[in-house]
Amino acid sequence: MTPTLTPPPETAAPPAADERCDRCNAAGKLRITLAGGSELVFCGHHANKYAEDLVKITVQFVSDPEFSWRGAELMSNPN
Image (cartoon, rainbow, N blue to C red; front, side):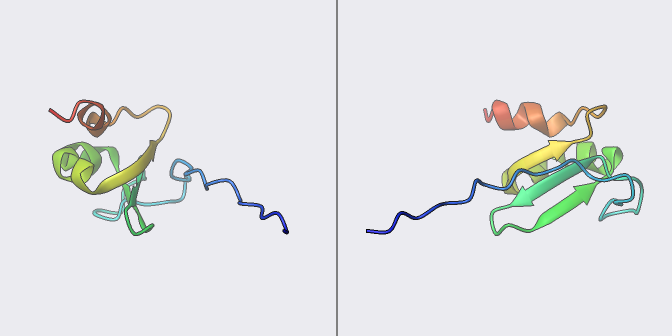
């Protein structure tokens, strides 16, 4: 039997300095990954404005270290 190596799961990186919000073109502060594997990037304003809806479709997220996303708390406390 030949052993099979499985690559480690990809880790998401925070938005790069040149990435822009998919909603308004401001600097990206949050990257979310959807169930199908596609990603969306949001500025701080839109990430927090749509947090309640985004947590419903987000499987993984990563934010700029200096940004606090309101949805992070909603994802850890689904009630």
